[in-house]
Image (cartoon, rainbow, N blue to C red; front, side, top):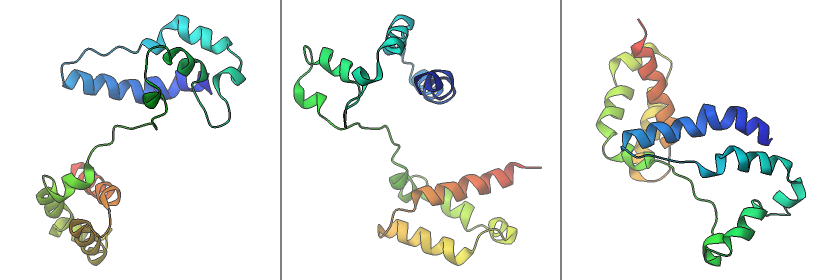
Length: 148
């Protein structure tokens, strides 16, 4: 799994995103845990020393205990999600409504206007988070429009 991550997930996904977002903010980003010596060392470490029941990064946590408070080490993993739900209610709302309720979108016949209206209304009222579904519809309709 480590090799698969190194050969696909990191270069084709994670590192590309980090590179693009850091450049967009004029930041220089380093990935110290990808130093070839550390990667090669960890490839030789037995799995039982990397993972234990319900605990990952065993060796890293042991070293970090010398430098980092315990409450930080026990903190759950936290992602970098974008606030899409809020954006669709605020900044992106006019664009979303223009695209999804346009005559072009309706005439295309791929989406049921009443279902979209219901999703948008529920999302805007805060009754249900439809941000992922609405985003998918927006991207699909935008793709249709970009085709010759």
